[in-house]
Amino acid sequence: MSERPLNDDHGDTEPGETGGNDQFAEIVEAETDRDPDLAVIEAGSRTLRTQGGQPQGDGVPARPADPEVDRELREVEAELAGRWGETKLDPSRVRIEALMDILGQPQRAYPSIHITGTNGKTSTARMIEALLGAFDLRTGRYTSPHVQSVTERISLDGAPIAAERFIETYRDIQPYVQMVDDREEHRLSFFEVLTAMAYAAFADAPVDVAVVEVGMGGTWDATNVIDAGVAVVTPISLDHTDRLGSTPGDIAEEKAGIVKTDATVVLAQQPVDAAQVLLKRSVEADATVAREGMEFGVTAREVAVGGQLLTLRGLGGEYPDVFLPLYGAHQAHNAAVALAAVEAFFGIGSQHARTLDVDTVRRAFASVTSPGRLEVVRRSPTVVLDAAHNPAGARAAAEAVTEAFGFSRLVGVVGASADKDVRGLLEAFEPIFNEVVVTRNSTPRSMDPDELAGVAVEIFGADRVQVEPRLDDALEAAITLAEEEAEYAGAGVLVTGSVITVGEARLLLGKG
Image 1 (cartoon, helix red, strand yellow):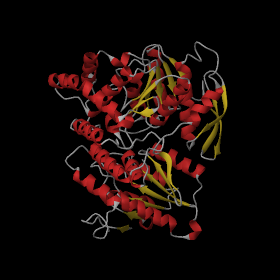
Image 2: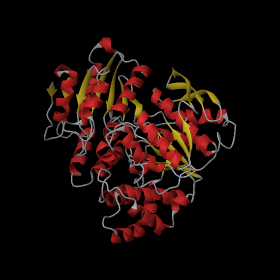
Image 3: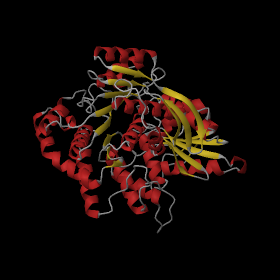
C-alpha cells in the first residue's frame, strides 16, 4: 500500500504557475465554515467559471455568465446552506405542510408522479420526464441530490431551471418561509425550502405534470405533501438503515407512505419482504398495482454501441427496438418501470387497452441522459463515473461495466461517505478492480482515506491499494496506472462511491 501525503502547498505547481485542480482544493478548504454541500457547489462553480465552456446538453448547468446573476445565486445558495443540511433530519411534515398552506397549496395545481425506492430513482425520473415531454406535456422534475449545481434539482421542460428563475422563486417564497420559521420549533431545512421552491415553480410555470423524487423514505419526506395519482417504487435495498430500518421490509414500511388512495402503484422487482409490505399498503389504499415481471417488464435486451437495445412489455402491449443510451441491466429495468408509470398516468392498462405511440416512445428513450450514472467523461484511457454509494448500486454498476466495456484492466477511484456500508461497496467492486485508489471528497461526511484504505486492504490486499488523500491526485494516479503498460490498451478508470465524489471528479475532468 502506498500513500502520497497531502502537501501544505496543495500540489506540485511551480511558483508562478496556476493549477486548476489546486484551485479547486483551495476553494473547498476556504469553505470549511459553510454547509458541506454548499462548499462543493461553490468550489465546482468557481472552477467551472475559470474553465469556461458550455453545458454539454446533459442537464448539468454551468455558473451564470452574468456576474450579477451569479452573485445573486451565490447569496441564495449561502442562505439555503445556513439551514439544516440533508443529513440532519426531523421525521415530520409539520413545517412543510405549514408552508404549503401559506403558499396556497401550489402542489395541488397539477397531477404528479411520485418516486421512491433505494436505487435508480433519478434515472427513472429522467426517463419518465423524457416520455411525458415527448407526448407534448409540460413537465416539472424534482430530484436529489445534485451532481454539480443546486439548480439541477428543479427542472422545467426537461432542462434545469434558469438561475434567474431559481433566484426569483426563492425570493418570492422567502417571506412565507420566514413566517413558518418564526412559529415552529425548528426552522425549515435546506431540503424543505427547495421542495417548496420546486412546487411553487411548477405551479407558476405552469406544468402539466410533476415528476417528484423523494429525498429519503416516503411517509415523512418533505415531498410527500403531494397527492400523486401514480406512485413508483424502484428497487429497495439497505441504505440509510439508521433512519429507515435494518431490513428491506422495514424500509418498505416507510417508503410505502407515498401510496395514496385510488392511486396506481408501479413496483419494480423487490425483495419478498419489501413486496409484501408494499402490496399490503396498496390494498389498504384501494390502489391498483402494476408489478415488474407480472404486468410489465423487460422482454429482451442486447448491448449496443453507446447503450442497449430493448424490447419492453408495457401495461398496454409490447414496445420493440427501443434504444436506451445508458448502460446496464439495471437501467433497462428502470426503463420498464418508467414506461409503465407513464402508461399508468395516461390510463393505459386500466381505462384503455392500447399502447403509447411506439415511435414517440423510441424517440423519448433515445434522448435520455443521466449524468454520473456510468457516464463516460474521457477517452484514452476511458474514465467512467458512477454514483453508486451502497452495495446494491455497486453490484449493478460492476455488472454493467463488465458487460458494456470489457476493460482489460480497470482501476477504481473510490471516495465514500463514512455513514455508508463501505465494506459492502468495496466487496461488490473487488472482482472487477485490478487496483483501487482510495480518496475522499471535500465534505466532512467523506470517510478518512486511511480508514477507507484499511477496509480496502482487507478486501483487495495491500498490493492492490493506493491512498491519495486528494481527489485530483487520485484521478491522476488512477489514469497513470491505466496507461502504464502497453498491453493494457483497453484499460479504464471507474470513479465511484458517492454522488459528491462523482460531481467533483466531473468538474476536475472538465465536464460542465
